[in-house]
Image (cartoon, rainbow, N blue to C red; front, side, top):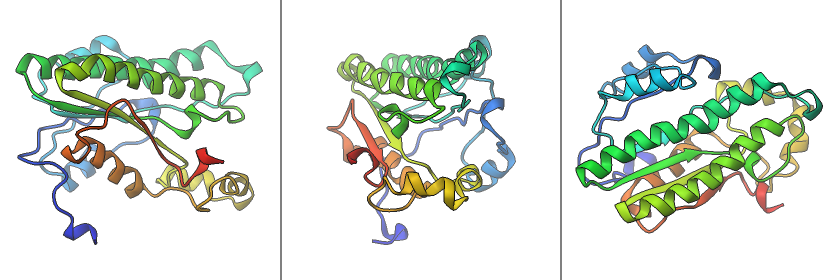
Length: 230
């Protein structure tokens, strides 16, 4: 069916979900987001700053659905990996996921409410990519974190899953992968022969947030056109 004919992905009224950003992860325009989604109140915070994040989220809520999407990709050859790249990558890609998820999960448990958390991982969590040693490590850790969160939060009726996309055709993705010579080796490993569009990832996240996946938790769901099958 066309997107307009789809029934809503979850029942009831939607909760207020904040948008979180980090300066190192690229440009982000709250004004544009607020215009497109007037029911959302953006919250801008440096997720690498533990105390600032705690303060920013202290008055937000209640939150029933969480998507951990912020990340950085600092690409370096293994022999040239720096302490700064390690610290920044793990602070944003992993530690912030733990902190924000703790805050949201504690709120859900205190209210006795069910919830769903989706962590945006990557195909890089399961395949080695040149110059991606730190990034691959953070996403591999995220996959295991997702499973442990699902194990521990399941008794509280909080589901936790991850999506693992291939290259996604965001503006940044188009800029970085528009060169046919660079894209060809990656596309040759994708049976469907194309990169993901943003809506492919969004639709998967909506499914995992919704009641339609009410028996699904602890999974790492590829959105990769078959890349991980090769």
